[in-house]
Length: 410
Ligand code: ADP
Ligand code: MG
Image (cartoon, rainbow, N blue to C red; front, side, top):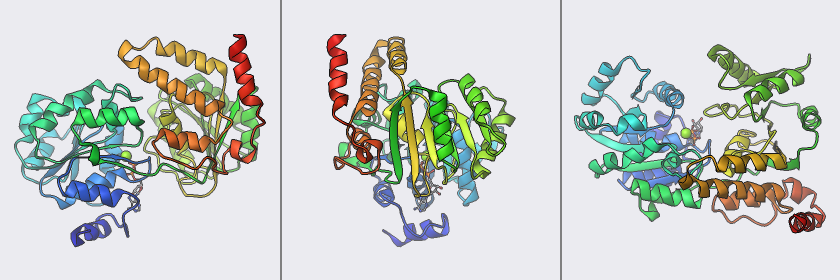
């Protein structure tokens, strides 16, 4: 580690050291090597491009899929003294930002993928030196991935036009197929892939078939005094469940994209400040939210993918203290998922099918849940974790035979 890197880490970010693979990623980037960093949410991906952005001459262009996410990061970056700005549809100060870029007065420039790929923007980028391209949420480039954004496909010509500028792709969520796709689509060599550990040992995983959801949720909430998030399947369900859970002693609120922005902001702020509140939300809730003491996350129905499940359940226990992840599923969830699979374009159906199969393996297994999750992310975990429902209470062997009987008689 060169001394100036360590100094920047301490002086600009206030961190005593790197965490996990950050140092490895930053070293590669500083050496100008193309890199794909696969790191779980909360592992500190932003630092991997922000630090080189400060250390290297020129401006770092950050491609990010969501304006809200960009603005959160922008605020955080400016707060630690990084010279950062964005060029998005909601920014009023384009001229000023462009002038700052040309004057070499920016470390970071955040842009959306569709903007970045435009010819006018490419010409603009030629007007000052670049230090790095950082492609955040890089799984969006893959049709196989769970969040495909066609605009990400337009990035390649831009990257290749600036072939000498290092490129760093970052994602928290990529199965083997998606990883391969990111490398190919963004022109990153295999040896440039760095994968951080995904295990969250303090989270206890429990998966149960849904029999009486309201009773199951009520039992869970009664046993869990700390703050918790319940992911419901629909907007209406979040409001209904929040209303039924809210009691005199304990607050429960709803969060979904259909609520007025003021309500969403107020509910989110209340949750972050609370020590016992329950947030009943759609998956619109949680991205970019930093609340370390969430004690449980429950899914009232099947998540969209293992990646989604890992990310959403991973919002529990960021402080490292014991936390729980519950998943309640029903056969009808799988029926709906299969239905949706046939509604997407043909090219995306294999990915959808693989996602459903992987979720089936997670919920139906009589073996270690954690092992299934970690293997999905390419790790090679021990067969038993000691901290999931199946490891703590090994099911009798009826599971396999029952499933087999079901299929045989069908
Ligand atoms: P990600 O994008 O991987 O989800 P972030 O970049 O948002 O993660 O970082 C998550 C949190 O970790 C932030 O609060 C950040 O300040 C903190 N963090 C990042 N790197 C370090 C480090 N080396 N030491 C301590 N905290 C860190
Ligand atoms: Mg991030």
